[in-house]
Length: 359
Image (spheres, rainbow, N blue to C red):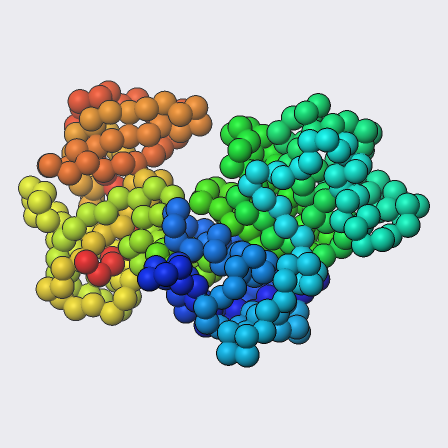
C-alpha cells in the first residue's frame, strides 16, 4: 500500500491546459474517485500518476518515492512505479486463457511456475473467477472479462491500483454489482485506489473521498456526503445529483440563514435557506434545492408555495413530479405509495434544506 501526493501538477497539450495546479494527497488505503464531465482532466491526471503522461509542471510521489519532477526532469516509467492499472476497454489478450492473462505480469518478471500458479489461483478466488482459468476471453461475459483485468492488475501485489472508467462498457445491472465487488476487493486488500469516472452514482457508492474536476481544475474535494449536501459552488451542485436552481434577491440575513424573495414568480414569495457564503441583503442570489427536499402537498400549509402539477412519473419506489411555479418548473420527488395527486391540479411545495448561493 502507498499514499499518492501530487504537488502543483499541470499538463498542457500545446496551448490547451488539460490539468491545472492540481495538488492533492490520497492517503494510504483510501478509495478516491476523480469525477467530472468529459474533458475535465480526470483521465489525464490518472495517466500522470501512472506514468503514461509526463506532467508539464509539478511533482508526483507514490509512497515516499518521487516518481515525477518537472524541475529536475525526473521521470519513472509505469513499470517502475509498482502500480496496477485497469482500463476501460478491459485490454485482455484474446488468444490467452484466463490463467495466462492474469499470470502474465508475473511471467515477465521471471517468477517460477509454482509461485505463479499459487498467486493466480489466489487472485482468481478474490475476484470470484475460480474454475474459469482455462476459458478464453471470448467464452466470458463482459463482467467476467473485467474481473480478469482486475485480477491481472492485482496479481503482482501493487502498492496502488488505478482504474480508468472500468465499468462504462457494462450494462446497468452488471455495472451496479461490479461497483460493490471492486469496493469489497479494495477493503479486503486495504489497497490504495484512484478511480476515474463520470458516473456520479459510482463515485458516491464506492469512494471514501471524491475529487470533482472541471476544465482542468479541482472544484471540490470531500466525502460523498460533503459533496452532495454542501457543494462548493454551482458547478458541483449541478453536476452531482439532481437540483433545482431558483433565482432571487436576498431580503435579510440572520446568522447562517437568509430570506430570499424569488424572482419571476407571482407573490411575493419568500423562502428561508442556509447561506453558502458571506452575503448581504440586496444581493442577487440562487436558491439550490434537491428534488427530495421538496414535499408536494395537496393542501395549503404555512410557508408552502402554490403551484400546478404539470406531470408525474412513476419510478417504482418513488414519484417524480414536475410543478409549475408561474413560468418556472420545479422538480420534486416523493414516495409512490402516498401519491394521490392528479396532473393539472393545484399543489403546494414545502421547501426544506435550501442552500442560498451567490448568483
